Structure formats: C-alpha cells, structure tokens
Image 1: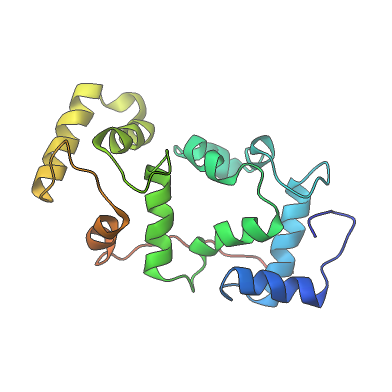
Image 2: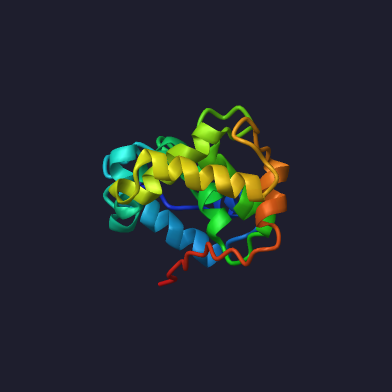
Length: 175
C-alpha cells in the first residue's frame, strides 16, 4: 500500500477505513489513495515534507512549517488518519485534538505561552511586532482565566473551542 504501481485491495480499503474510524467512504479512500500516489513522486510509500509543499494550498498556509512536522514521512494509512480531522464526519473533539497538536510542537501534552506566541507569530507575520503579539496574548489569556505562566492542556482547548462552530472540512473529490 502506498506504492503508485500497486492498487488498493478491498482489504486495504477496509483496513484504512478502520484506521480512520470510518470517517471516509470507500470511494473517498480510493480518491485519497490516488492523490497520495500523485504526491509520492518516487513511489516510496510515504510523503516527504517537500512533496507536501507541492500542494499550493498547503505551501501557502501560514502554519505550513508546523504542519510539516506532523505530516513529514506519513504512509498512506497515517495520511488518511491525519486528513480525517478535516472530514465533515469528524467530531469536534477530533478537530480540537489536531489544533492542540499544532500548538504543542514539542509533543509534551501541554501548550505554553511561548508555544502560542510562536503560532501567533506564524499567523500574523510582519503585521504585528513581538511586543504587540505578547500584549494581545497576555490579554486574551487573562480574559480566559490564564496567566503567562499557565500551561494549557487538551482539556483547556476543548473547553475553549468546545462551544465554537469549527469549520475544518476538506472535500474529497470522487471521480
């Protein structure tokens, strides 16, 4: 699975469906496999960071460097699992877990003030000074009941994002 010259068997499709909690239909998995094979230019069975950057929408994303750390070297099953957070069928918790991982760059299960500041820097670019970013973040954290020294856990993200209407959906074209 993952080699452009191979085809997915029914067993492979069902295995991938199980791996992604049935968030994609069999047709969508076949379409995702075709896209995976296009990205996997050397038919290695995984997609490198450079191959991900060949997707214009991905390369233009201000968080692309953070996302690359999450997706570099994914095989097909893990590629689909990563994309499953963007499925219309994904739960809010699955979407929030992905957002948390974007912020938790050192994968220690907690997000610090500096972790959030780095994401804010990626998102705002040169339009804000470091001082402005820090002031905004201190104020936002204060309003949410946190301090600069606080560490946010996944449960905190769930509490903050849980009542929002998260729109993180990617449509999978089916041929």
